Structure formats: structure tokens, C-alpha cells
Image 1: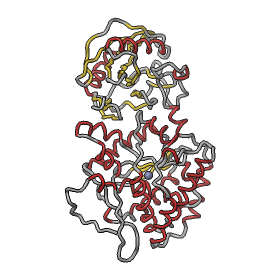
Image 2: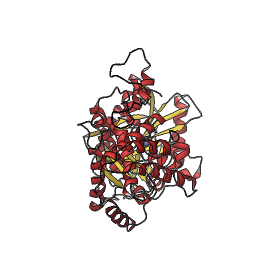
Image 3: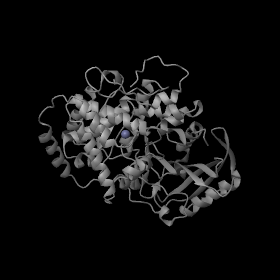
Image 4: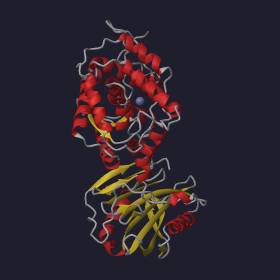
Length: 484
Ligand SMILES: [Zn+2]
């Protein structure tokens, strides 16, 4: 056992300190004390980051709007939030709770407090405490500011901004579900936490549960359940392979639980929980995250080698305006970020999750099962050429193959993307969706790793003048991650 004072020797390795869990007995109880990891970001940055990411979640994930279920989950969540030990409370944080209408056993929380709980997780739990356990674990990641702490470890000053966009989340499950959720956000918004952070979240989660009047052993039970599901071959989450298990998770949560005094609960947990479960089971079958992600894939993958890549999946809600006017691009912009770039997008356009290599932004009425009619798409393609001109030609070839109504109109012109040499060209043709002539501007730049990054700006020819300014603004705002 060792005592860790607030003033540490500067000579010690900051990293080691940041990730170690310090164990020391408290006077009355033997509960484990958790050291806040080192963090170079401000609490306000956590809040800001989480707020922006939550907006994307609302846009891209099906949120279950059922006031009975909502207020129930909210009440459990607030009960847990009130039980966070004072040393891990941040007055700036606002814990909020939404239910995602997805089938997978999953939950995730964003910096500063927004939490999303899958319907599948609530249905899979046997008792309220198991659901509360997963929520307490997620809440602990937030309270310990793990998202920005993890970024503190990996970021250099140059990639700070883009890095922040890439670190959001912390899905409790990785694997298929986590990866699919990542696809919804274009590029890996959901990073996995280190084993040390997982263990911290388990321990603090158990402590929060006990303080809130839940049996912390329920957390261990829930994890065991998730683990068993993944081994069951029933398409469950790949818990073991992809979610860092700190090792003997079940045992150490049980050990911690044995040291904790559980406060009295409300007494009506189980009746309420069963009511909510049966209410949820009355809804139609929820889609899996994978199905949601697939439905969100609204533009063909440029790669094209796999014929399936060019199938437009069924869309879940996009309806083309067809003849009616699509709203003009807002002059207000919202910053959108992912692993690869950040960009300012008109505030009335929504992100349309692509696959790992592309993402589109379009206004209502301009997207659907056959792609977008107005808006922009960003994509990365593997190229056979490092030469910008040839790589750009290759991109154009790929696009005119997968959108065979388009032809290149004119040659390439010099352009810049975030200060890098780029080429721009125009494609044109009669859109099978609108029946109108469509104009697509393609801007390409090489990433130096055999890949080409490109932006495709799409609008009907006769509306191009309305969109040109937005397209220019978007292009000028584009910042590529310095890694590339
Ligand atoms: Zn976790």
C-alpha cells in the first residue's frame, strides 16, 4: 500500500502516474481509491466536445421517444449521478440519458455527461441493478474524464483539434456493435479505453452503485452475462476480443463489492423495472447497430472492387424532394470532425454515415436510398498512383463507373485543400433521381500513404449558383488531420 500525495515529484513518469490505480485503504472501508488520470484539457472542453457529439448521435441514431421509458431511465441515471463521490463531481457536467432503439447490449457516454443506453441492454438485464451497473460504469468514464485523458496521452499539439473529434464515446462494447457504431460516425468516434481505464470505471462504477443503493455485484453479473452472450454464437458482441477486459473483471468487482456498504434502495426497483421491460417488448423488434449503420450508407463506396459496395442499401427515412425545392444551404455553419478531417458544414445539413471510408452531408429532401442530390461527400480511396494527376484521374474513373450517368466535363484545375496541392474537376450528367442535369465538383488531394482524399460537391446544374458559396466555404474550412 502506498499513499499518494497531491504533489508528485516531477521526475516521475507522468504516464505511469496517469494510468496507475492507486490502492489505499480508507479509514472505515477498504474501498479502492481511484486517482484522476492526468488531463491537459479543461472541463469546459469535455462539455463542449460531448455536446457536439451528442448532436451527431441525435442525427444519426434512432432515439426511442417514449416519455415513460425516458423518465424511468432518467430517474435511475440521476440517482447514480447524485451518488458520484464528491471528489469526482464536476459542477459543469450535466448527466443526461437517452434510450437508443437498438438491439445490441450496449451503452455509451460522451464527455461532460450525455449518455445513451440501448434498448437491448435494458431488455437483457435481469434486474434494474444490472442496467444501473452498466450506466454507472459509463458514468465513471465521464466523471474520470477518460476521453480527454486518453487523448492527453496520444495527442501532439498539432493534431489536438482533430484528435478531439476522434475520441468521443467509449462504447461499453467494442466488437461488431462498436465498430458499426463507429461507422455511423464516419470514422471511429468510439475509441476503446485502455484496460486501466476500464478497471477504474469498474471500480468507481461499483462504488457509485453502492452509494446509490444498488448491489454492486449486479455489475459483475451483467458483465458475465455480456461475456456469455458473446460466446454463444448468437451474433452477440465480440466482448472478449475487442473490449479490453482488464482481467478477472468479475472477481475484482466482487472483491470491491465485498468492501462496500450498500445504501438502502428505494424498494420498488424490481416492479418498476419489469413494467419498463414489458413496455419495451411491446415495441417492434429493434434493429441492430449493424442494420442501422447499413441503412445509413447512402452513397456508394468509391472502391468499387466488391460489387456489393455499389449497392445502395435501403434508406431509413431519406425521402427525395423530387421537384419540390430543397432548403437553401444555411449560412450558419457547424463544425463536423472525425479521425481524418474537420470541416464546417451548413447547419441545416445532416451527416449521413458512410462506411469506414466515406461520409456525406446533405439537407432534408436531398438524400435517400440512391445517394445524395444536393450536398457534399468526403471519401478516401486507395490509389495505384502517388502522382496527384493520375490518382485524381483514377478517382474520377471510379466515380463515373459507380455513377454511370456522370461524365467528366472539362479538365483538371489546380486547387488547394488545407494548404496542400489539389486538383478540381467537374462531372455532369442527367441524374436518375431528379431527372435534372446534375453537376458534381470533385476536389482531390493525395494523403502520402497511397491514398487519395476527395470531396464531391453535388447539386442540380440549375441550382449550382445557390450552392457554390457553400461549397467554397466548406472547401476552405477543410482541415486534414496532420497525421496524413
Ligand atoms: Zn468501459
